[in-house]
Amino acid sequence: MDYKKQVAQSIVSALDGQLEEQVVYEKVEVPKTSKMGDFAFPAFILAKTLHKAPQMIAADLVKNINQENYEKVEAAGPYVNFFLDKSKFSLETLQTVLTEKDHFGDATVGNNGKVPIDMSSPNIAKPISMGHLRSTVIGNALANLLAKTGYQPVKINHLGDWGTQFGKLIEAYKLWGSEEAVKADPINKLLEYYVRFHKEDKEHPELDDEARKWFKKLEDGDEEATKLWQWFRSVSLDSFKHIYDKLGITFDSYKGEAFYNDKMDEVVQILEDKHLLKESQGAEIVDLDKYNLNPALIKKTDGATLYITRDLAAAIYRKRTYDFSQSLYVVGAEQINHFKQLKAVLKEMGFDWSDDIHHIPFGLITLNGKKLSTRSGRVVLLDKVLDDAIDLAKQQIQAKNPDLANADEVAHEVGVGAVIFHDLKNERMNSFDFDLNEVVRFEGETGPYVQYTRARAESILRKTDHQVTVDGLKLADPNAWDTLKQLQNFPDTILRAVKEYEPSIIAKYSLHLAKSFNQYYANSKVLVKDDQLNARLALVKSVSIVLKSSLNLLGVQSPEEM
Ligand SMILES: NC(=[NH2+])NCCC[C@H](N)C(=O)O
Image (cartoon, rainbow, N blue to C red):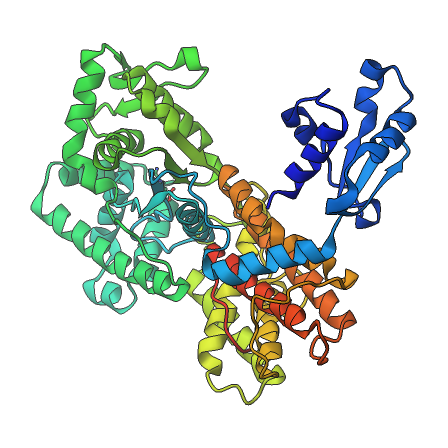
């Protein structure tokens, strides 16, 4: 039920069609506090046409409005305030949630369109960073949101498994590496070699020439180089998968940069045919002056291809494979220019679908105010962060509920959920600081708080043998009003989150719903056996359903008990 539409229609008929419904609909507001009603119409917009004082217009409107559908309609200065009929509203809302359950909020706007989401995409031979974590959890939440609204998301892990850094790594390994050492602790060892390379090449620039040679060999299929590369790739992938398992996130494809090696000749060919390639100091570039962008470097002097060349091949491959309605790239804001260049080159190549490519950028995570980077070796090992979060969750669960049977499983869901939720409650583009003790708290704006609220709703339902039915859902209790309105807003909230590619909208929504429900529960006696018992328990059940759906959309589990 679209109550705003109902309000707009009431106004239009009271005005005898002097304004279009659409115009009125757009003007109807939601007042700051519910004391001023659930909707308000600024009558002063009619002052010029009607040559009357705004207060008069508001007062006249109130007289002409059919009040039947409302608790009351009143004029307040130049505004008309509408108070919805709470009983009717609760009946309609609770009935919808209880019958649609998990499907409440499903939509069809996506028209089954396929949407590849380039997400996570860490680099081989380096630990997966907090930045990759952001990409992973934002991408996963967007995939869930898209699926709920009728799209078909395809989660692609575009592994950084190709590029000049592999030349550096091979050179470093040849100089300082040992097979046993790598086998014992793959990622940390490989990182150590890489960091050492970047220290030593400052004094020995000849190292860079060697590294370049190794990369060229790799591109030419040299046996030794290829073998080392394959080994580095497979140990790295094992360690990434270990973390994805912990996060509970899966991918539909692991086609990384190397997959496009044999698909780049075609890219270069098209660029040549369209006379887009220019020589510049021996390298091949595409001039993007008219887009106000730096030229895109397609081929280096030694013929080695680049990150953007592989992205061009990948974009074309995805269009051919999925015929996508849109194609998303969840990658940090530091790559904004890269994606602008990518879209511009595709456009120059004559691919109109380049407009359907969207870079979904996000801000940095800092740790105690410091930026994290791999080169300097200041990496936060994600695996450790997750384990610490699980430990913290376990301590709190043991204190609160020492008898909980599946405490380890719940601690995992709460600890990991806390890290994911903390990431997603911040607007994508905001940078934020990460302090684990804040993240895993059971109070405040945290994932565990929402999980705890939902578990509490379930425990209330376990306390009674009353079976909730969809009859008798009229709930006039003003304490329940904010919660009911939140529930009713869920479908719209989902659509907004999808439209803005902004999971934080769902995270904030779930916090608001949890908070309003806790307030309701503190002020109303839910389990008293009177004629509204069914309606109150229906509210509790509905809150549980919607909190669980919200958490699941974010990729966070929702334990029944904690
Ligand atoms: N198609 C892409 N460019 N995806 C993003 C890749 C991210 C890259 N591997 C990095 O860690 O910076």
